[in-house]
Length: 261
Length: 266
Image (tube, rainbow over all chains, first blue to last red):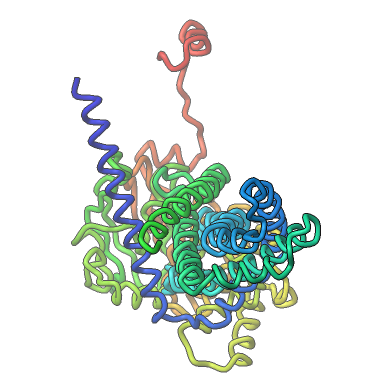
């Protein structure tokens, strides 16, 4: 009779412990900004990895998202005779929601999984232990550059997504479906204003923190709770990182939207 | 001539969650000498190693370093301690994204303000010491396991530490390279007066380099003393370990049959 209660209690304790460890992880990462080693070149390298190398993926995603939006938007708007508002529909959907969220999800899948795996492998090969034994703060060396790089890269990638998406929408809407070009751009520029853009940018900044925080945390503690350090633990850490990041992005999307709308 | 002890372990008990892995470990590590901790796999020597390098939390009063309580070290004190030690992990633990020379140079880059040229020269010198100078610009993935280990040793030595901790130096090495590493450890003790702690299960290597030997089994210290004392020990478990005898448990056909069919029902 005691056992289910005992397991429940143990489970609750483990969750509290993990939550605390997650919180401390973030604090140590922030503290890493002021600790050695130098951050500039490692951050630049991470900007290249997280940002620059994601351009092609984001470009493709954005183009086809914009094109589908135009297609779907047109077929719905013609029912009300409002095809002229296509520019507005495409622009607002991208800037407010699809740009930040899809960019975050694609970056999670591409860079987030790679980061979790890389740090997880460092954990199982005792490289993080080696850093600590050399009196080098592992947060400062490994995690902080990635956080800074992500906060810089993701809003930029989101803006790129928005531009390419709108162009994709234009291509299909005006080029294929015959929407009036002037109406498209006029609708776009009159509907999308700074509050929409700032919502998108605030979202992508928050998503950037979530993605790096979750993915590096999962990699950093790969195998630590079980006490066994092997490929299975790295694989599990990577999978968990991507799944939890994605869900966290979607939940925070709702929260930020409800606050800022 | 009394040898000063740099580290004293007093009644160390260690747990992983609720499972006890170390039971009342007590011995001393003398300065400027090579101490070898020997034991079969699973005897707890790696856990002890992790306590000594500060990777596993130690309770107060159980490990004293230079008379100071390792268990009560603040973060700053722990950092200072770690700058005095060099650690070689079992697989070398090199960073995959950096070349060999960059790996060795890292502690210097972080902790000193030396010029890049100077740092590179010092790193190449240390690589020379372990026979890897011509592989300076190779990446770790291009090297064999033994070479990675030697590079790891070069990195452990780059800051000229007072104490060197080595986890299983000969594992994965061919006999010639292993012997070379043994000679290097002895040279470090002679030339620099380095205190060296080696964790190993290789008997020959241990007796060749050790000034003190500690034999462990199932989380306890079985014997500790000079190599000749250990070699002539009367304890049957020590004798068994030294003569490399497997556990001679006698089984009868009936219980073996049951074991095969029913899992661990013995």
